[in-house]
Amino acid sequence: MALDMVEVMASLGFENFSIVGHDRGGRVAHRLARDFPSKVEKLAVLDIAPTLHMYENTDMRFASAYYHWFFLIQPTGLPEQMIGADPAYYLETKLAAWGRTGDAITPEAYKEYLRCFSNPATIHASCEDYRASAGIDLEHDRLDSEKIAMPMLALWGKSGFVGGAYDVLATWREVAHDVRGQSVPGGHYLPEEAPNETLGALLAFL
Image (cartoon, rainbow, N blue to C red; front, side, top):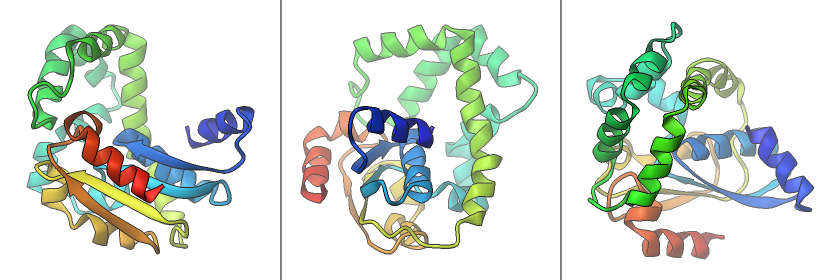
């Protein structure tokens, strides 16, 4: 996925760029900065800690809040079958658990989520992404010996899990030299729950 992003940007005429990623997008952004450091001028990640750090420091609190990481990586097709049996219930339950603002996910956005997750191929692709994060992605992370050099911004929800469970800046400073950041109001959905604060921090950084 990181290579896809590099190729898309090149096709649009951008050999160098800054990148902002939220959640899974933040993990792609992290890998892109690792694999293509000459391409990335600045890196911003929203509401995540490094994948390897999270897996290697698993405890009951993390496993309870991030149960989907362990559910979606099952190799037998179990998660695909269970989600596909009632995608609306899965989405409503999952989306409600992560936000702290009732209207963060608009009806229009939810309708699109449901349209996508009513497609078995989409459910399978989502599971495959998580399976990769627990497999080849961890192998790549363990091979990274140099710290990320470009300036990095980490933002997280003040009332969300990530900021409450980790010292976000300290964990990112384990893998990057120049890290700054802060919390913004709300839970996991930073752009939806705190649009002005999130945009302000990003614009100041970029």
